[in-house]
Amino acid sequence: MSEQLVKNAGVAYHAARFIRWADSFRRPITPRDVMDRWNVSRATAYRWLRGYEAAGGGNPVAIGGSILEARPAATVGLQS
Image 1 (cartoon, rainbow, N blue to C red):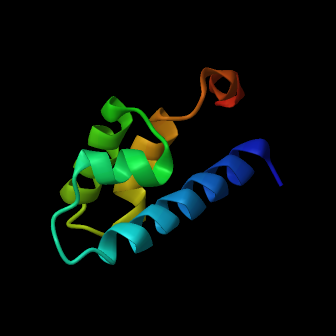
Image 2 (cartoon, one colour):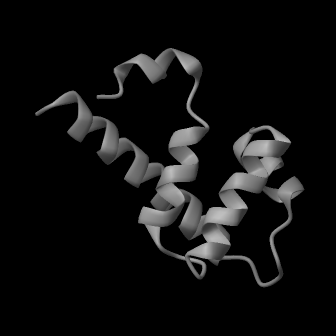
């Protein structure tokens, strides 16, 4: 398997976990909810919520890009 394929699978997995968690809410999700649950910065929480909302609340492709943006800088060099 190529590194890119493995990386994409990891992004999709984490996006699916976020979507499942976000879909379980019975109220609007706040950036604070995302920050507390996923231990991310405020800016990342807003990016993830923006991706989630833009996808209509459940499209892993749209939110996957936001999650990829939140990766540590050490993984940036692995992108093809």
